[in-house]
Structure formats: C-alpha cells, structure tokens
Image (cartoon, rainbow over all chains, first blue to last red; front, top):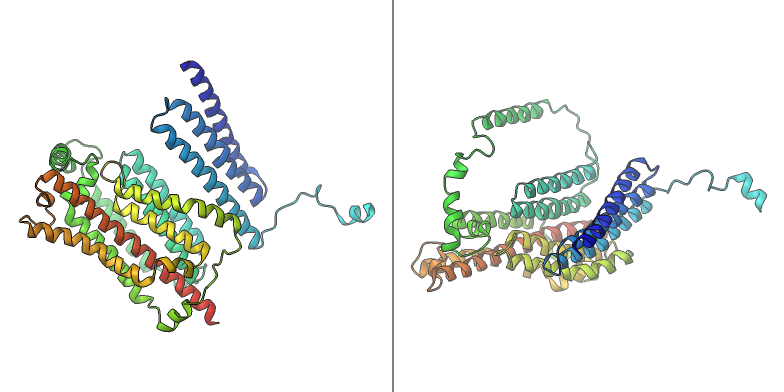
Length: 115
Length: 308
C-alpha cells in the first residue's frame, strides 16, 4: 500500500516539476507578453497544483496536513489564475496587442482573393 | 531606473525573497511578518501613492555625487562595523549567551505559551512592542495630518463614487469569494498567535489587506459605509489605549507596568490574558492605521479626479 501511494505521489510530483520547467522555458523563450503570461500561469496552476497533489499523497492520512494542502491548492488555483487574467487584461487595456504570426494573419492579397 | 512602478515591484520581490530566507533560518514569525508587511501591504501602499504621483521619476538636473558619496561611506562603515561582530552561528555569541537561553528555558513555565516568539514579543519585551505600536500609531497620525480631508470633500463623499474597477467582473466575483476567507484567516492569525506563528502585527495587516482589496474593487464609498473614517480613527487610538491600559491595570493590581502576572490569581493565566489583550490592541491599531493610510491616499486621488 505504501509503495503504491509512493509511486502515485512521485508521478504527480515529477509531472508537476515538468510543468514548472516548461513554464520557465516558455517564460524565457515565448515571443510576446501574452504567450509568456500563459507559460507563467501554467507554472502556478498545473506545476504547483500537481506538486501539491503529490504532497497530499505523502502527507500520511487525513491529518492536519491534508486539509491545509487542499486549502493551499484551492487558494492558489483561484488567486493565481485571477492574477494572470488581471495582468493580461491590464496589458490589453493599456494598448499592448498580442503578436500574431504572419501565417495566421490574413495578408492583404490573400483576404481579397478569398473574398 | 526611472520607472517607479518597476522599483516598487522589485522591492516587493526583494521582501518576498528575504521572507523565504527567514523561513530557511527557521524564523517563521519573522518570515510571516516580512511576507505580509514587506511584500504585501507596503507594496500596496506604495502603489497607492504611485497613483497620486506620476509613474516616472523626474529627471534630475544635477549629478547626485554627494549623495552617492554619503551612501558609499556609510555602507563601508557599516560593513567595517560587522567585522567586530562574532561569526555567524558561533555558540558563544552574546545572542546565545545573554538572555535568550533563559527565555527559551523558562518561557514554558513562566508564561505557558507554546510559541516562544509570542511570549518574548508580548511579555518579556512588552515595552518594545508598545513602542512599535506607538510608531505605527504615529505614522497613522502623520498621514492624517498631511492628507487632511476638507469638509467639502466629505460632503462630496456622500455621493456614491464608482470604483475604478467596476467593470472587472471576474476580479469582483473572485474577490467576493476570497475576502471573507482573508478576514477569517486574519482572525485566526490574531488569536492563534500564542500557539503558532502569527500575532497582532501580521493579523492587522492581513485584515487591512482584505478591506483594501474590497475598497479597490467596490469603491471607497461602499466600504466606508461599514468602516467610517471617524470610527477607524477612534480604533487607531483604542488599540494603543488597550495596550497601555493593560499595563496600567497591572500597576493598579500591584505589579509593574505590563507585568501580567498580577492580572489573575494564577501568574500563568494572567500572562495568557495579558498577551491576548496586548496582541488584540496591536492588531486593532495596525489594521486601522493601514486602512486609514489607504483611504486617505484614495481620497486624494478621487478628489483630483472629480475636481476637474
């Protein structure tokens, strides 16, 4: 039983760490602000969330630690997503436009030919 | 760096990092204070004051060579001063030989509070904490005196002034869910300070942060229906009075100033009661001073906006 819990817990922990890592890479490598904030919020939600779930399996039963971890998870899911939303909205409102790649953007010639 | 917004953010990050350093050094109470006061409320208050002044620093016309010289000299002297200090973690440093062992060994028997930090802060070092509370009280009075609100503005305040973030539905809904929890957590920190990390300072700051969040999202006039300016001003003084009053009661009952042993027949029970009341006083003062500072800043902004 202990072994099974340990394995599940480590799967969650390692996946969480992986998402933290991808979030960090994305934060450095993505081209514009909005895709970067997307990467950063993945670190907060998926990364930290999965690590917290992994820790819940390690906490050893329904003690005092488990509810605290659940509360931290709920709080971080609520707060960090809202914060990312607010930051992105503030950026949009102050005039920062998302960068669209040239393949997605219909250029003048194409749009007129399709029409 | 002339972008003051970035400066404020960097100082917040610095506070948060130093909070985790304190946590690493096992100073949980200090880390908690640093995170809530340094990273939390002071960043918030600095942002509120940035709203009053402009975001970018004015260009200076002179080169501040003298100021640079003063800073460098003072820094060098401070570093030179640390050379005389005992090495970090030495067993025979004054910190470890003077009063600390006595506090750690006797606290449980004399005061009976599991969290030694609280017993040192509120009982052994009660005078110092009274001084700190008075400092915060004075800061509140200073802001009140500098940013006086005229009678006319008070009349205008009767009208409902919409908040800047009236349109932010997601923020408003999430905040509505969180604010009761924040206030409850503040009370938990306040009354659980004897047993775990926490106490009046952190609790007051967290409580004020909840109210400030509400004010930002739902408007100043809505939140001032509950927290009227005059009431908070009274509470600022009431907290300090409660603290000092406990001390005076101790004197009347035959002890020294802030000697809680005399509050009840049993010294340990007296200490418990004294610490609880004193921490409550600290919490009330800190919370109301923080709210007053934020409200005054916001008034100033609103006044500028609606005068035009």
